[in-house]
Image (cartoon, rainbow, N blue to C red; front, side):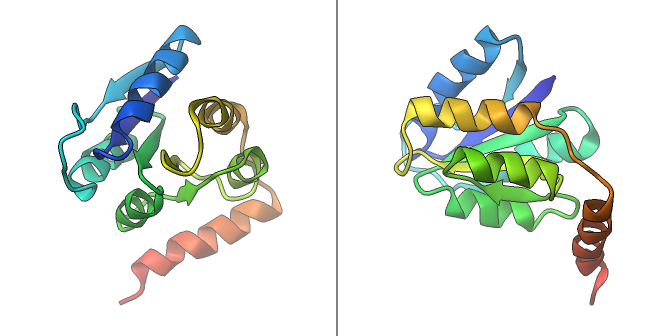
Length: 147
């Protein structure tokens, strides 16, 4: 599995820990920055990470900022991205099972590393159920075509 990962300054430290956790589990991680805790703008990192998901370079993405809100907003402006902000394991499971989310956002100032690891693991290892949920995902995706 190939995962795009990105953070702003608020999520930098957790990104570094999460990268090590994922790589130890055999996940190939592509880091789209930021590379320090110097103040920066989250869209500058969300956009290229989501681009890697959309192009197929990466299977999915994980975005981190202080709350996860900014990253999720920026991600969901990308046509084809279904980003879910998750702060608990149940939401991470259900957004994959029912929403077929392709990007996970988390807030580094909201959750700690151990919970972030569990949420990411669940997100990456839970399959989409399809069926009646596909119809709903299709309706959500059709919203992008509205003028």
